[in-house]
Every structure is written in C-alpha cells, then in structure tokens.
Image 1 (cartoon, one colour):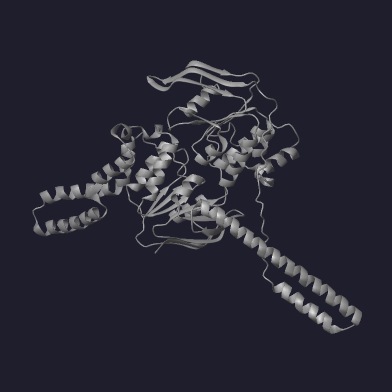
Image 2: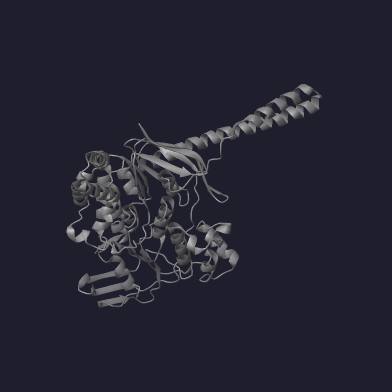
Amino acid sequence: MIELELNNIKKNYGLKNILDEMSFEVKTGERVGIIGANGSGKSTILKIIKGEENSNAGTVNIRKMATIGYLKQFYKTEENDMIVKDFLMQSFSELSEIEKQMKQMENQMKLITDESELQKIVNKYGKIQEKYITLGGYEVEEKFSRICSSFKFDEKYLNKQYNLLSGGEKTVVNLAKILLKNPSILLLDEPTNHLDIETLEWLEKFLVSYKGTIVIVSHDRYFLDKVITKTILIENGKAKIYNGNYTYFLEEDERRTLAEFEVYKSQQKKIEKMKQSIKTLRQFGQLAGNEMFFKRAKSIEKRLEKMELVDKVVLEKKKINLDFKVSGRSGNDVLHLENLTKKYGEKVVLKNINFDIYWGEKVCLSGKNGSGKSTLIKMIMGYDNNYNGEIKIGTNVDVGYIPQEIKFKNENETILNYFIKNFIGTETEARRVLANFMFYKDDVLKKLSTLSGGEKVRLKLANLITRRKNLLILDEPTNHLDISTREILESTLLEYEGTILFVSHDRYFIKKVANRIIKI
C-alpha cells in the first residue's frame, strides 16, 4: 500500500530551482532515507509533505486517515518557562479541551430538570465522548507512562526546565512528544544531530521496531545503514531511488554511474561515426557531382538531429579542495591537563581530569551529552577560567577552533567581507579560495545571517585553513555537513600534519580520523 506519493514537485526560491519535477513514493512500513548535498532540497521535501511549505507545481498524495509526526532540525526556546512534563503533555491539548467541555456538560446535566433539554445535552455529550474515546482520552496516563518508560524519562528528568536542555536532549524530548500522538508517518530531519553515541544506538533500535512509516533526512552513514530500507538521492532537483540501505546505495550508485558512462561513450562513438559519414558523403558528392551523396548525407544529419542525447556522465564528483597546511610545528607536548575540576555551584561537571596530547595525534573527546566535553573545550580555549587544576598549552602551539554553535559578530556582513579580513591576498584570490569551498560567484555576497549550518562550517573551515594553525580544536565539526563534504574532511584531516582534538558523535568519522579516544 502506498503511504505517501510526490508527483512532479517543483520548488524554486526566486530564480533558483531547488526541486525540478521530482517524484517518488513511500510504501506503508518502509523506512526511507533521503540523502543529497547541502541545499539540494531535502528539508524542503519534508516541509512540503507536512504542509508547512507549498510547492510551485506538482501534487502530494497521502493515504487517507494517515497522520504525520514531524521532527524538525532546530527547536526554538519556549516562551513559557515550562518543565519537560508540561511540554510533553501539550500533545494532549485537544483531549484536554474535550475533557473541559465534558466536565462543563456534566455540571450542566446536574442542574437541568427539563427532560427534553436534558436529552439534548445527553445526546451532545455522547458525541463528544465518542470523539474523546476515539482519540484515546481514557488511555492518556497509560500512554504517557509507556513513552516515558521507553525514553527513560524519570520523575527528576520530567521536572527539568525544557529551555535548559541540551540540543540532543531537546531532540529526544520532541520525538517523545510526537510519538505520544502515535503518528502513522514519521518525518525526521537530521534526528542524530547533537545525540551522543549511547542515545544514537538506542534511537536506531527504537526506529527499527517502530510500527509505522519513516522518512529520514540524515548525513549519518552508520545510522542510515542500521535503520533505512530504501535510499532516495536528491540530485539536480530529481529523485533517484535505491531499494536498500546506504551501503547498498554506494554500490548500486557506482554500478549505475559506470553503466551510464558506457552508454554515453557508446553514443559519442556513434555520433562521431555519423558525423564522419556526413563529411565523407559530401566530399564524394562534390567529387562525383552526384546529388544522391548529398541526399544520404542529409538523411544521416536528420537522424542525428532527432537522436535523444544521453547526458554527459561525470565520474569524478566536485570536491572541496581542503589543504590544511601548518605555519610551523609546535613542541612535542601540545596539551597538558592536570587534576582539572569544574563546578557549577554545587554541581560537579568535571572531576580530576588528567591527560596529555602530543604532536601529530588525532584525538577524539567522547562521552554522553552533558558529560562536560564542550565545557572542557571552552576551558582549553580560555573562554572559561573558573576551574581548579592546570591547563598547559605547549611551546609554539597555534590554535584554530570551530565551535559547535557557530555565531558571527556581524550577521549583516557578507561571506566575502568576513573572509577577506583574515586573508592575505587580493579579492580575486579570496574568491578563488571560497570557490574551493563551494561558494561560487554571487554566493560570496550572501549575508552571514542567511547561511545554513553546513555553509557556516564550510566558511569556518575556509577561514581556518588560510590561517595555517598547528592545533585544530573542532567541536562536532560534521554537524550539518553533507556526506560528500564529510568524506572530504575526513581524508583531509588524515593528511593534516598538525595535532587535532575533536568532539564528535559521528561513529564513521571517529573510526576514520581518530588514533586515540579520550572518554569523559
């Protein structure tokens, strides 16, 4: 059974086409992963399915009676300073309203003496009660308890302030809120961002056992491999379908590309032969003065004009040219932490942390959300000096840093203006470097306030590379990067001759880059 179907969807922002007559279908019970480059329209597809954005053309068909739960990539701060429990209970707002009506009518019935009036109220009450039952009104407590148990929300957690939760905690709480409504279709936009590895593994198992249809936008390769049963690649505004997980997609995409390349080569040879025949026949016609040769040449020319040309197949995809040079090496002892302890009031976040990092090491700082990884990074960077213990940075260490949440002092500044401030060279040379990071032509005139998460990371990387730092400190560097950019970053960091300390929950990235893991 088809759960949802997109037919010839077109979507443009101004003159830029994002989706171009894109079509695909999702069957009941499928777990579908949507992949593609940053800016290819993946999140836009989810918004169109949910009805939060309109397409410029095409139709979206959703199975009758199907319900949709939509997990967004970012969540705003709640105006009311509510606790987690109250936030979750918002899922039952419709039931709460019906319950209020029922209580009002129950009180009315106690006061009415006229039988005909009483019968009218009873009939009305019966209809409202039927709706209450259909929506699961008498199962709220049981459903709430079951979800809290699944997500391991105890009483202490339920009484936490929602606005004080970390990014990963907000993702999990919002997913729980959606599941309280038990939707038949789950739309998940980058659900693994900000999740620690333990929560990630739990989420994988949860989604695999979910009795419903799931559509996921994600750049997490391990996660996609574990969860999805079908892959949809969004490329040049179109959808390419692969009936398997991410590993299957890689193998099948390579096979299809090579097959298409062979077809393209074969057609090019045929075209070249036909052009040569046309040229030869005309030469014969001129030499012999025979009109028949010209007619044959014209006939082949017409066949050539009518031929449906196969698109040129590019085997090498566009790459960001990342080349992390260092201005000079540091001493062998890069970083020394001794008996480091950090408290917030009475709460101990870090206790007696001891480790050393040496020249050329690539070290991953690992641990659960809230374990103090980002706090430790800020202390090393000197942004937080309120701690006990010692942090010693070695001789000639020059630090480059990319934080988890990238913010700019002047959001109205353009990409070019921001970049050129720390760049030694001409504007033309600066544009050339930015083009290596996929900021082409007028893209460099975009304001910083309009950049996506992936674009912010790319701009920070460009800035970092030109400054030639010999110690890179990266806090969740792969968040918001598409898969191809992650792969390029991985291979570049492996070639980097300096020292790296990074925080990440991307298991594929950690396995590829780290030669040591420090777990907090």
